Amino acid sequence: MKSIAAIQLDPKSNLIVDEIEIPDPIKKQVQVKLISSGICHSQLHHMHDPQLTRPLSLGHEAVGIVTKVGPDSKYVKEGDHVIVTWVSRIPKTGRYVPTIEGITYKEKPVYVRMVFTWAETIICEDEFLVKIDPKDSSPESSIVGCAVLTGAGAVKNTAKVKEGDTVTVFGAGGVGLSAIAMASILKASKIIVVDLDNEKLEFSKKFGATHIVNAKENNAVEEILDISNGGVDYAFDAIGVKITMEQILSVTKGGGSGADNHGGMSVLIGMPAVNKIDINPELFMYHQKIYRGSLGSTYPEKDFPYFLDLYRQGKFPIDKLVTTSFKLNQINDACNKLDSGQIAGRAIIKY
Image 1 (cartoon, rainbow, N blue to C red):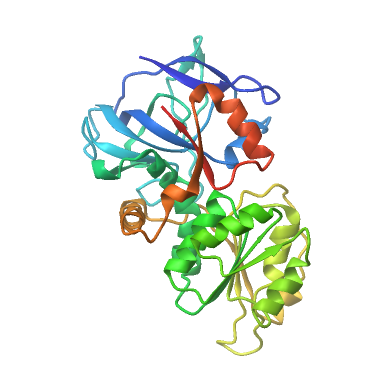
Image 2 (cartoon, rainbow, N blue to C red; image 1 turned 90 degrees about the vertical axis):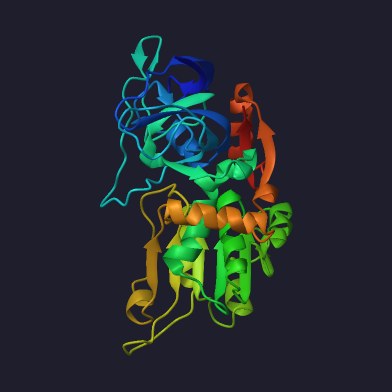
C-alpha cells in the first residue's frame, strides 16, 4: 500500500514529503495507522549523518491503531491501540538496530532503523509496539515512546533515584523535562535544572524543578555545588555536548576510601555530539564516582502503563510536555525550529 511519509534523499538536503510503498506485513510484522508522532532531537543527528543509507525514513515514537497483522504475530490484532517505540519489548543483549525490508520510494529501498514514524501509516516488527487502552490513545501519548521513556527511565531504572536524593538535570527539553518529572514523582529533595534559556528554565518548574541555573549567566558547576552543599547524588545530561558531558561528573558528590564510601552517579542520556571528552580520573579513583550511559532504560510493557497511569492521576503532565504540533508537510519547519532551540518541551506531528 501507499503511505505519505517524510524521507531524506541526501544528508545535506531537506526532507521531502511524498508517497512511499509499504508491503503487506509478513511473519511478526504489523501495519499501524498513526495518530501522532513525536519529533526527537536525535533524528536531527541522523539527518546529518552521511554514513546512513538514503533514501532514509525517520521518527521513532508514535501512537496509532493496528490495521494489518502478519501471520506469526500473536501480540496484537487489528484495531488495537499501540505506542510505537524504538525500544524492543523483548530483552536484548548488546546493541540492537534491526532494519525493515521491502519499503520503497520510486522503486528504491528506503532505509529504516527499527521503526519509522514520520509517516501516515507504517510497518514494523511487533516487538516495537506496546498495547495501550484506547482511552490512553491521545496524540500526546506518542512521546511516551521516546522522550518519556528516555528521561523518566534514566531516573527510575538507571539511577533508581529514591526519596530524599538530590538530582541535577542538564537540559530542559522533552527528555530533560521527563527526567525532572520522574525525579519529582520519586520525591527527590532537590532537583537542580541547568539550561541556557530562561523561559525553558521557568517552564521546568512545572515539572518539579526546585532550583534553576542559567549556564550562560552563571558558572553551572559552582552553582550546583553550592545549592547541593558539595554535590548531588545523581546528575543527568540530557544534552550531549562536550561541556555538559564533562560537567555532570564534576557536580556529583565525592566519596572516598572504603567499601561503601561511594560518590555520586553521572548519567549520560543525550546523544553525544562528539566522540571524545576530557575527564579527570582522580574523580573515579579518589571519590569512587560512577559515570554511565542510559540508552532507553525502560521495560516497555511494564513502564508505559505506569507512565500513562501517572498521567491520568495528574502526577506526570505529559500533555504539558507537548507544546507545539505540526502537520507532516511542515516537518522541515519543525526540524529547523527544534534545531534552533525554539521549541520548549516536545513537538509532535498530528496525522
